[in-house]
Amino acid sequence: MNSRHVPITDELQKYLLNVGVREDSLLARLRDETLAMRFGHMQVSPEQGQFLAFLVDLLGVKSILEIGVFTGYSSLCMARALPEDGVLLGLDNQKKFTDIAQAYWQEAGVDNKIELKLCDALAEINRLRKKAPNFDMIFLDADKERYPAYYEACLAILKPGGLLVVDNVLWYGNVAKASVTEPITEAIRFVNETIVTDKRVEMVMLPFSDGMTLVKKKLQQ
Ligand SMILES: C[S@@+](CC[C@H](N)C(=O)[O-])C[C@H]1O[C@@H](n2cnc3c(N)ncnc32)[C@H](O)[C@@H]1O
Image (tube, rainbow, N blue to C red):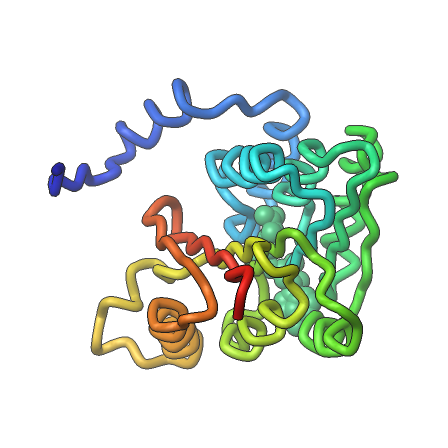
């Protein structure tokens, strides 16, 4: 058993990126362009992007819902890992961001696998709930204050055995600080506490980047 936790210093993060991540020039260009923008920090880290792609490939995922496309880094990673007949439905409400995403999807030759919908994501998911559950994987990365509502709605539209990935579950470390009670931190705390006690799912919380929880919907509910 190893109970030693290695703090991720800037030096160690640099090492991790050097030997743990295979980011090609297209992804690096998108990351740099995004980082130069206001809110650029919202994109997933390169190691998260690679991890998402790895999961898509490993699990043979064919249908993905992404909640929060932004400039497209995570969707590009996942779409590339999808098979030719795979589909990613991306939801966002800011065209100025998704215009950038679409340009990169096109350049990467994955735009044929991606359907983009500009909308309020929660309203759209609640609309999708009326149909049979049909996503193999969902990546939840938007509108944190309403995470509790998204969690329930996502479980409803996820296939049995499917995977929900919830980003930012550590919220800059604020979830562990009792003095922080602003709405997003409270919403994320609520979802974290819901997931760990939810008998409908298997789960693992990963402390990398800003924290990511993997939630598998059990086959039998
Ligand atoms: C954290 S960013 C997503 C980052 C993206 N996954 C990536 O790795 O580049 C969150 C995105 O969610 C979008 N968003 C926020 N609230 C939303 C809502 N209610 N409906 C749809 N999109 C929303 C924002 O416009 C933003 O682009």
